[in-house]
Length: 329
Image (tube, rainbow, N blue to C red; front, side):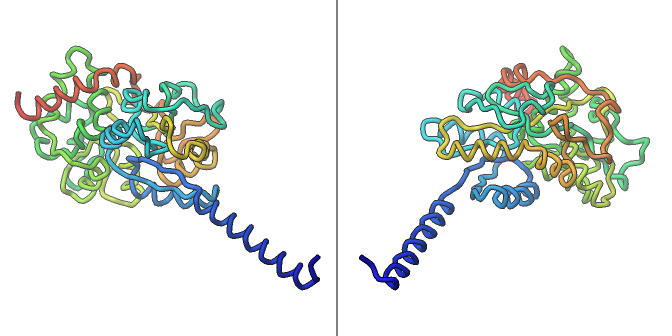
């Protein structure tokens, strides 16, 4: 049928076609991620995921509120596969656009963090104050949420907007949780002291750069500037703070759901959780990964329980009241 030379040529052609086809398939493997993560964490993590799995990750970065609004608007034609690192209460309030998924290693997740409907814990986050040591003496540091309402701090506290930022909304809900019926009376003068930022990640930078004396932020955001040798210190509110998970979730009927599941498996794996602890200053949600030795154990400060269902169910009401206070109604 074929000469030896013809067989050799045919073998080479078929091998080339197979290799080319494999490359085309490889190039087509992708996952679309909607994320409110800090850009520095995205930049550090995505190459690791792509190298590990061979899947191309397309990241759409926005504020957590914008992410939820976009994913909700796309519910009849989803464009995202995974929502990655936004507030759990926002995911809880939008659980109908999410798909339930039990990831690899689910049994290693701390039971206290398994609180979501159709979403999973990603890392444990803690609300803290960051203070500039050049602008305040230790005796002037705010030590409680109520201290943020002090007259000497008016216009000197940076915070993100609670109607845009998931972490800032959690800070509002934390005050309401701690003070109950008097929560709004406590929070109103705090809000009136804030200089509001459109970005939660900018808050600790403003404090580090001396543009604000105090910032209300997440522990890992503040920790980055402590690690960098900035003139800043972290304060854990003595009247209590929240240690709760931010979330990761599979979008219902996403275009690349299988790869979305692979991303979630990777994000919650022991290897990735250890990287987040060691390199990014986050707290793990796995019980086989230890927190950074540079961070105090949760037992070292007062932690208050956080009710995601209550927070999610009242989100629209609380944000409206927040805006009413802001405009002076």
